Image 1: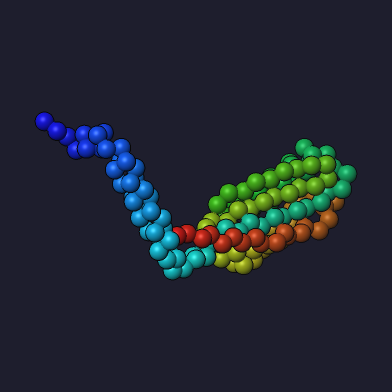
Image 2: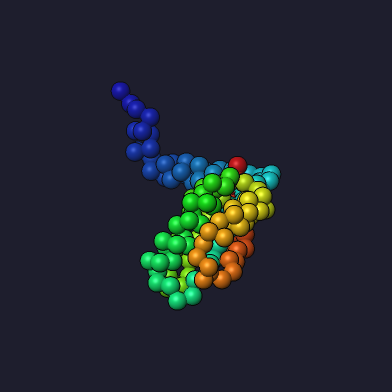
Length: 141
């Protein structure tokens, strides 16, 4: 009883030629694939930085970062929030959901921060907002 593989065992050159034909056909198939469109994928982030001159990191976290995080978390379109508190400085980075309108999110986040600004310690100086970053994702099909 002969099997299909016995042909290639007896004729190794035939096995190599068949492998090369498959490889060349694969390369031709890859080259002939068309990319019809590059989808736009907005993966934006907003950074809120607040200064509290002369305060320790624990004080900044307790009186600035935590109240801001709680207020900002109520905004729509937020995927997750990262924060850090250093000597006299609070930095909160808000990552938005994929393809959520970043301008709408920035307006909502700034209004939420303005709501809680009066409740923050009086020694805080101005709150600044970082830029919105966008990415483009290329996919092939």
